[in-house]
Length: 209
Image 1 (tube, rainbow, N blue to C red):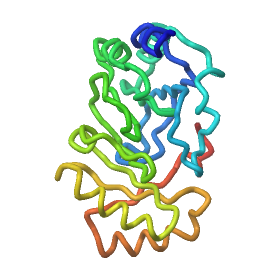
Image 2: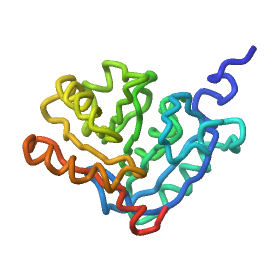
Image 3: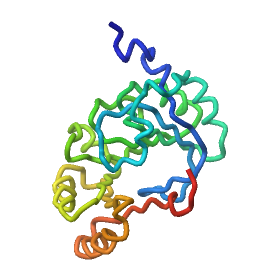
């Protein structure tokens, strides 16, 4: 029986959901242009996930990473954002080596549940209560983004703050369907805990990918 590593040739092929040039909508780099690479496959199962179409890797085209690299390095903004699904399902070193040799910075968006591969200039960790990150992600995360769906989630956010490095940026992001209810509560929390910042899904307001 083939392993995932066998099937995808040690990271030289990935199940590509979509790749596109746009603006980062969330976190520290909100408003910055970047090339986004969304890979298929995720077994975390967040009920409020807005990319459930990416969960099943079998329905997405297995794509040569060389072709992804070739497209991504030709845009004015020299940054890629690898997202999912859960991108750390796969070995990403071939991808990051290929773009970095061309002067492109690498950003990763992950829940941190699988071993980290590849070389990253920026790691955004979005920890999930029902499937917690590996310790190495807490140590390496540049920013942590906790999704706030209900008031009980603030307790989870506080527990995660204690696990990351002191240099890690702290973000709270309202779950989209609960935006109107949770934003005022998040605002008050941050006013009392100013080490945190708010992250909004600005790309949804702008109606861009």
